[in-house]
Image 1 (tube, rainbow, N blue to C red):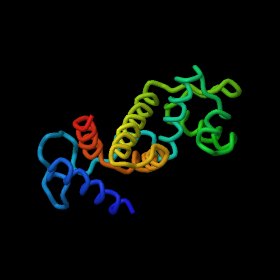
Image 2 (cartoon, rainbow, N blue to C red):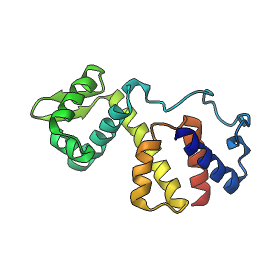
Image 3 (cartoon, one colour):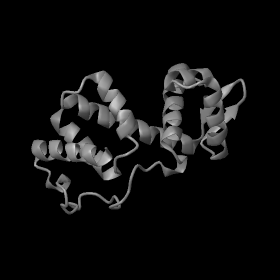
Length: 165
């Protein structure tokens, strides 16, 4: 599925901008310093799920000033106990500070990861909307894609989106 999704993205970008770097087997154009096999840059979090939690904590904290297990659980469609279990894991990795019954805050490292995930998400949503995908579907698809695409691909999509504005 991932390979097919990347092929579709490559075709759209290649047709729209003449960006041959996206064509299958094409060499890197040299316009970036991203390593050839580099995926999303948030490997410190360990999993897609952890990245989703960090992004949710960031978004809710910015809206409400704090984030509690119930808030995160509602946002991600999981149980509060599942959210609490993930909080323990993220806390052990130094990505959040979890105070039982008070909520969670992001550490500097956790914030950096969450901001990067949200950046990828926002770029992908905008791209998908520009090619005619509905806002709701674009948001859902971006949630999947944000974890799977190479950093160079995200950068090229960002450039594509900015040129079309």
